[in-house]
Length: 337
Picture (spheres, rainbow, N blue to C red):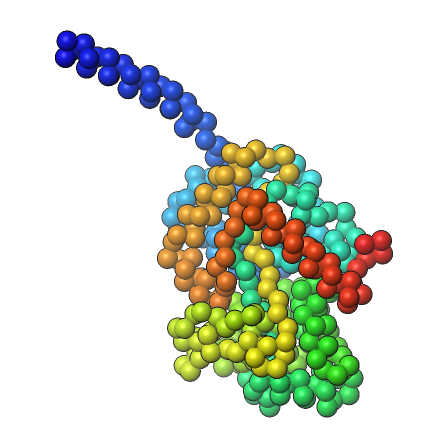
């Protein structure tokens, strides 16, 4: 009798295994190299994050197929977004996003929106910092704004990535606090170039992401005046000999009431399956669990908010509305928008 029961149990186990194994085998994973599109130039925050992720995935063998990173920055990133939009149903293509997900179609009229893509996950929110040369005669945002007010209109140059995108939107917001004085906004193709231009003093200031200017801060070429967040950074390890990210005051507490953060998220083409989306959600969760990621987040002073699914889609929809309102006020909308 015991032998009979054992056989029944064994048979049941085999049946259970037989029913589970096919389901597990059906879990989707890439069958060829995955193209990771960056809708921005080299050296900027999106470029650095995408290439870092590529390195982490390879180092920890998180995916069987290789990840190939390509920059498609033409048309303020429209080139990259249109490629993914036109790759409907292709699960071997992903794109990292920044605020040009919203600003490019609104300012240029290029026929795409985030609704043409499939939201995968928010990886983090990127900060913006008001940077000036290290030897600039002002040490606070208030002192800098007072200098702009005292100078002739458009004498001060603000460098930024692209036109009618996040850097220029922040610049317009700053101009509200200058008593009507405007900057001469100088656009460049990527955040890395923007930082170099400030080091060379070809512009007076920038609102670069932390990671785009961190090395120049460490080297003593640049200094931060304030961070455009509601609260100071939580990272307390020293970046320079005397300062950590947490030592940088918010712009609001410095007398410049402007707040702005940027999405670092992942999208896929439309027409992909839930199983394919889930593969990448799980992949990026594994990336976020590595010590490499935690170090990277601190090096760039990122806000580590993570979202997926409906929560992420709702956040994106709300962010689009915020950008629309800001750009409408600044006069940056394309005709018909």
